Length: 145
Image (cartoon, rainbow, N blue to C red; front, side, top):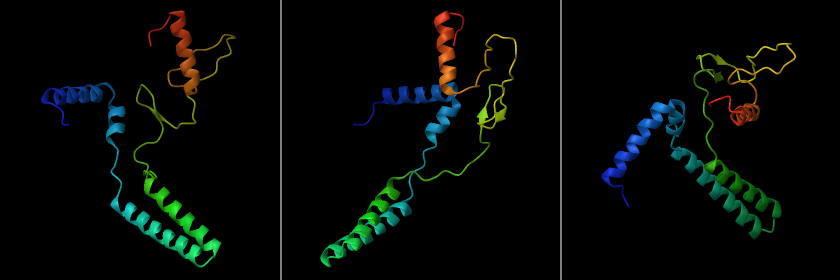
């Protein structure tokens, strides 16, 4: 059932708002590449070869040929449905609010010895630590995240 003109306009408006609000998320959502047909052809050939080996192994009462055929069939199907590896493009790392790119393992916060807990800079620490700190700030009412 196709969308009505009103629904198409609303959907386009939502796409524009998403692109303006969070361009990285919109780019990530749009960057799905269709799978190559060559991948399916290779998987199909592997499936046929594996099936022939399985049948041949069963017909000749040679179990190891049948097992190899099954493994080839399984690998062919797994290859067909696996996501192709993406080549690394552009800088790899974490982009801070100021636009600086740092490696994922590098920490940008300095340690102070004041005896009190320091508030980490935005983007530092693990995801769960940042989430917990955000929750604590909200529960105390001293932050608007």
